Image 1: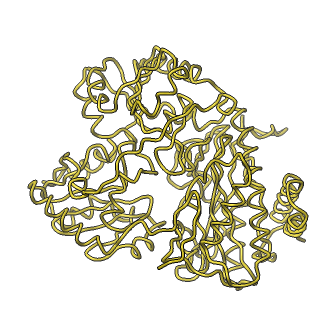
Image 2 (image 1 turned 120 degrees about the horizontal axis):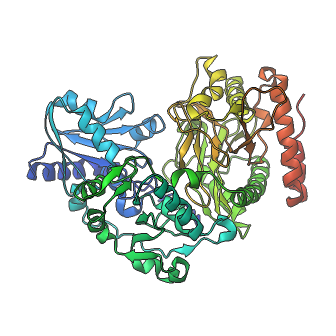
Image 3 (image 1 turned 90 degrees about the horizontal axis):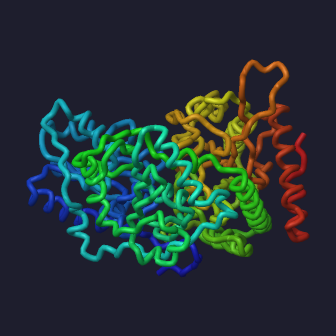
Length: 605
C-alpha cells in the first residue's frame, strides 16, 4: 500500500490499468465481430473535441491503460495499435501490454497502418468522436481500396458497464471586468462578420469558444473551466444554446432574451432545419453534426471556427488581467523554488514537490485551480515530456539530478503556464551543455522581432538552431496558444513547424524548447509571451513588426548554465530578465525568500 499524499487539485492514483487491457480488448473484438465489422477506432476524444475530457469519455485509458492526453487506438483484423506522437512514445510503451503495438504518429498514419494489414473491410467509428476533417482524410487515404469507414454506436460504451455519468457542474458568469467585452458586444461583432461574409449562422461546437462568446465558465472537466454545450450563432445576434439546462439555470438574467436554451439531444434536429450559408469548422465539428447539416437545405461555408481568432487576440483589459495573474503566479513559484533550494536531504519525492507547489499557489485567494496536472519529473522521469507522477512512478529527489517542473494556475484574470528545470547540487557537464543550448533557443525566441504575417512555422527554427548545431532536437512544438481563464492549450496560433496561422497582437503563446535523453534526464524552460507591436524603426522598410512581451517573471537556474556557451547578447537578455524578476517580485516575498531571489537573479558576467 502507498502512503496517501493528498492535493486538492491533483490525484496521484494511477488512473489506467494495463493489466485489464487484454481482457477488455478481447471483449471489444467480440463486439466488432457481432456487428460484422473488421475494425474500430477508439480516440481519446469526446463530442466536444477537446483536449481535456470528462471521466465518462476516458475510453482510451479504460480500454488500454494509456493515460496520455492524445492518442488513438485502432483495432483491425485482431491487430491492436495505439498511435501517439513523440511526447508519449515512451509513456505509451510503459502503460500498455501486448497485444497492443505502439506506433509513432505522424511517421505512420492510421490509414497507412490499416492498409498494411488489409485492403478491404469495414472500420467502425463513433461519429461524435471524430471531426469532419479526420474522417474525410481517412476516406481520401483509403479511396483506392475496399476499406469502408462506417459510423456506428460506440462499442466501448457497450462493454464499459460501470461507465461514469456525464458531468453536471454548475456554470457561472465570467465578469466583464475580466472579459473586457460584454457577451452582447461579442455576439454583435461576430454576427456582423457573419452578415459581411454572407452567412446566416455559425455552428460552434468547441466549449471554449462558447465560454468566450457568452462570458460563462463551468466545471465539466478538470482544470479547464468550461461548460459542455453546443451553440448556433445566428446573423441576427441570437444564439441557440444546447446544454444541460440544470447547469445554466442561474444564468437567465445574464443570457437575456436573445439566447434560447435547448437540450443537447435537440442539436441535430436544429441543424437539419438550418437554411442559407452556415459557417462551420471542419477541424472541430463532429462528423455526426456534419451529416445532419448535409441533410438540411443549407450550404456549408467551411472557413473555420468564428470564435478562434477573436478569443486568441486578448483585448487590453484581458492582457492587463493576464499580467496580474502571472505576477501572482510568479510569487508562488519563487516561494516554492526558494523552499526547494533550501532542501538538502533526499527525503522529498516528486509528489512532495507537487503538493508543496500547490500549497504555495493556494496561499493567494485569487488562485482558482491548477491549469493542468503539474509535471514534476526528476532524473530519468524528466525525459518523459508529459510525465504524470503517480504513487507507482514517484521517486525520491536525488542530489545532482535535474528536476523538471511544468505547472500553471487558473486565475480569473488569466491562465498561467511555466516550466523551470533545476537541481539540488551539481549536475554533469553534459546536462549543463544541454540546458544552455535549450536556454539559448528560449532566449532567441524571446528576443525576436519579426514582420506581421509570420506564423509559428516561420519562427520555430529559432528555438532549435543551437540544438541542431550539436545534432540534437526535441519532439514537440516550441509553443502553444494559451487562453484567458480557459484552456492552457488554445488555438489557433502555435509556435511549431506545422502552424501556418499568422501571429496577431494580443495572442499569448508559450515558448518552451527542451531536450530529452531517454533513461537519463530531460530539460525544458518555458515562459509565456504576448504578441505586441514593435516600435517603428527609423529606416525600416517593413510596414509593421511584432515583438514578444514576456509574462512570467521567475528566475532561471544559473547553476545549470555553461556560461562559456553564452554570447554577450544572451547574457544581457538574461541579466535584464532577472533584474525585472527582482523588481516585480521581491516586495511580495519574506526575508529569506528575498535573499534567495537576490542570489538567483545576481548578474552573470
